[in-house]
Length: 270
Ligand code: COA
Image 1 (tube, helix red, strand yellow):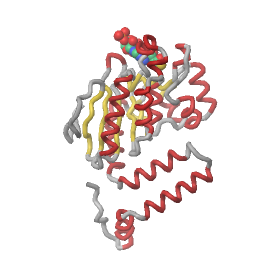
Image 2 (image 1 turned 45 degrees about the vertical axis):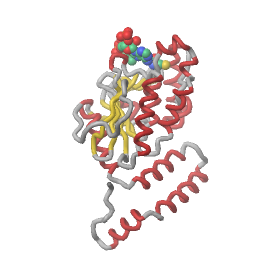
Image 3 (image 1 turned 135 degrees about the vertical axis):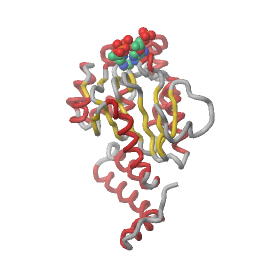
Image 4 (image 1 turned 120 degrees about the horizontal axis):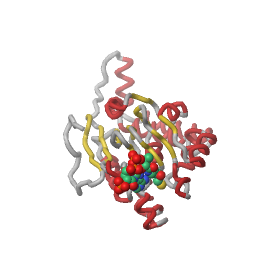
């Protein structure tokens, strides 16, 4: 696809399994590039995704990241061939686990634009994103049980939290997948669009988000994610402490001053 705002944000070792571009101001677009394997997540590919997100993490010029696959597959999950050959050494490879940790701890908004299959680790990667935009025809599922294993990149924990026990159990125990409409109804997906518009819509939303203050975005994301980690009452305390930090920022002071003075804010994102 065409990237209107230029090429890779930073130089470094070239990527083999993904491509990275600045697609909108302050938005990084990560496109998976292993179409012949339905974007199966080899350890090397997961490591590249993590490397791209690490770059975005420390680049204040990036406020939001979008990741996507191709028309046929967002990703068909962990690389089965690799796991067949190396067994649990592949499934539990330290560099793979570190890559997942990097994805999950990415502090800026992360959007998944999903067309086609999002299965196994591909579904888990979509669930690790903050917002999922799906094309009609997208397929979500956890087929690991068909291989005599179960999900190992988070779905046994994230699915019940995000979609409830019954649907989580149905997907994980039966291996049967669900379509985009069902994922939408379950709250796993924020919007379903025509597949030709999936990436466009994700970038449109990313552009809106990327126009917001980075500190406020990071604090807001951390608060929402904290809801999955702590009891409600502790989550409220976390939210209050976070809000106190947001109030200390010059961006907040100027934004509120501008509102009461009925003028445009002078705070512009770089
Ligand atoms: N790991 C490794 N290779 C994979 C893969 C995976 N998870 N998913 C697909 N591939 C490879 C296939 O082996 C095939 O490679 P080949 O051309 O060298 O034989 C290629 O991708 C195309 O796959 P194919 O099955 O022919 O495509 P399809 O469009 O008919 O079906 C899927 C797509 C996703 C339904 C099917 O590939 C599939 O079921 N994949 C496994 C999904 C899964 O179990 N994920 C959990 C892994 S733990």
